[in-house]
Image (cartoon, rainbow, N blue to C red; front, side, top):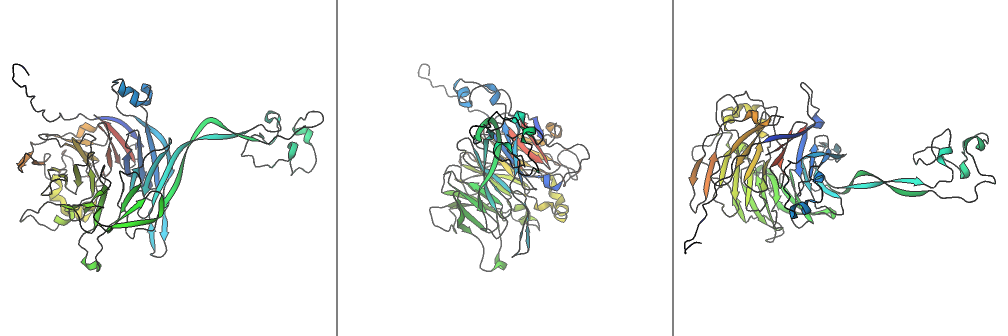
Length: 513
């Protein structure tokens, strides 16, 4: 204010596009190396702090990574924030531990083989320095506790271990030989104790019991705390933690169940779309997720391209939704593939719960939960594949389920494509950011120019955006021939920084900007 005149700051424009750089790779393949089916990564998830990353694979294993760059800077993260300490380095992770979460099973009643493949991983709240997470395959959910345990050793033995001969140290707890009092061995055919051990004159005056003491060495122990089984007739496609820290949901094709983390033998069916006659079935549930802050709200998507918002306070069985989000079909645009490519493979809430991001086969859509007339923005992921839908249908690629993710600040979104590519879009108002990256050590080599997005006003200053990359028939966005065998289905965005972890077959690539 100067002389009564108000100075009004000009509205800030959209953020500049990020320049992505390679950070790390775990499990990198050498040229020509054959990938084992069991090693292919099938799930990726950061925890809320971003200090831990978990991956699951088709062999039923869960691998944990921990962040290392924040530990080297000295003091806790909270202390550095208080000192206005800026973390200049990008997130770096190291291998922490791994464990076998699921084993292959066989359902004898249904003559059905149950794969060990990990479908989803979700982190739970940490407690007492231990990490907790949920993992699921097609039928069974497990609750895991991963904790550092101090290694215990035996000390204060009767006989000095350094004077033992022949059969190794007495102090070893793994020794298979059973010893009698004063060092005798029961399987000896003759008594030659004096040859093995030296005893004081008159023998040992008193018997000492071995004492177990904790050493400074630690080892990571993963323990399955609970198993949530026998609740789904169809394959589980989603699990999601509630913000109350006590409950979670699991969803299959036709039902969503609500569980308490402490109770493994009972769940409540809260959504059931199974018709009385299965011939009347027109759509299935494809993904489900709890609202990040409202413990009574969840969203689930369907194979028809719709998203339903459900309020658990309305009724025990949430047959009716509070809101329905779907995009109306343009007249005359219907084809044989319309319904197949409209199926939503993944949905994610933004950090504040205001927006929902959905991924169908061809596009990403951003929805405002306060506006159910249509998506706020639509992003074309690989529009150049539209002429190839017949080929994609023939080789079943059209049924691939790509995941999506949002940045912690809600300004950008990302999803995968074929040829090990993934796309990053800016979703701030006026942003034209649309970056194509390759899951390799040189992510920007596949960079392509993008056209200016077309915008259509919806009134009330809300803009619907359709954004495309460059299009060329017969080749992908980079001028290369199609490679439907290398697909980037799984990726996750760090909750607080511009860092993305993505899976290309059995390799975990990490990038930062």
